Image (cartoon, rainbow, N blue to C red; front, side, top):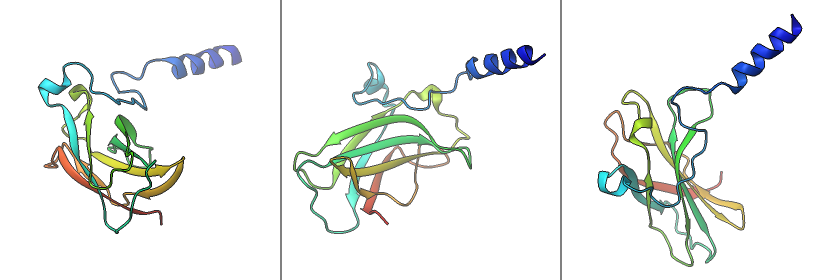
Length: 146
C-alpha cells in the first residue's frame, strides 16, 4: 500500500501541468516571429527620485502572471539591460507568447536595478499590463529599496 501511494505521489509530481508556461522563461532577445506580431510589453524604467545610476548598473524587467493570489508570480518574459553608464529613462521590450495570456488573467511588469548583485532600486507599485484595459506600453517607476 505504501509503495502504491509513493508511486502515485511521484507520478503526480512528475506529470505535466497542462499548457501552463514554465515558472521562469528568460527571454533576453525576441524570439523569431514575435517582432512582426507585436507580441511584446514595452516602455521605460524611470526613477521617482533623482539618482545617478552607477556605470555598471543592471536593469532587470520581468513580465509576470499575477493572476493567482497567495502564490508566487510566474515569469513569462525577462529583459536584462546593462546600463553601461546610461541613466534613466531606460527603454525595455519584453516579447511574450500570446498563447500564455488569458484575457481574464492579471499581468504586471516589475523592474529592479542592481549593482554587482546588490539591489539598489525597485518598483513598489504594481504596473498592470495587457488585460483588463491595461496597456502594453508602460512606464515603471523605481525607487530606493524600502
